[in-house]
Length: 115
Image 1: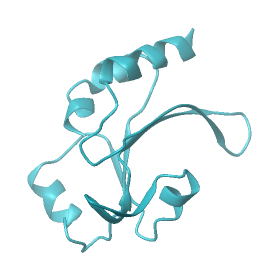
Image 2: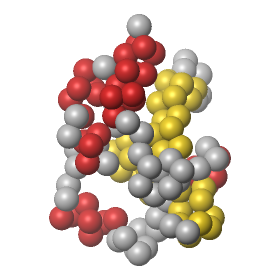
Image 3: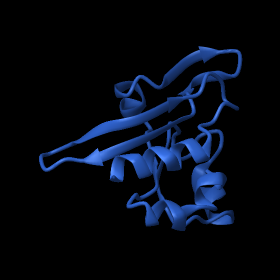
Image 4: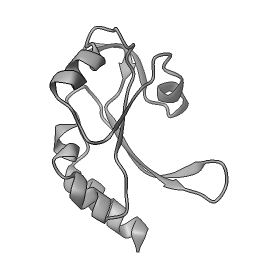
């Protein structure tokens, strides 16, 4: 989250908007409300408390050596369509909780989509 937030203006200049989604309950282990109160961000932050979105995108990580009923770290670029939804134009699904999308790769994908 920090790497994207630190380059938010560059991402917005590419015509995108950041939104973070956490497969976490409001009062869960990481207590996102308390965390965000101490570390505010300028972007949208959503909780997927029932894991519906996480499961719909194939990102649910039910059990692993580093995970229990959470999401694989992932970065998606979803383009707005003129209809009721959007299309996924880029997805990076981390293999473990430390595997994150390379930010330069994401920015390159944004620029290619925009052109």
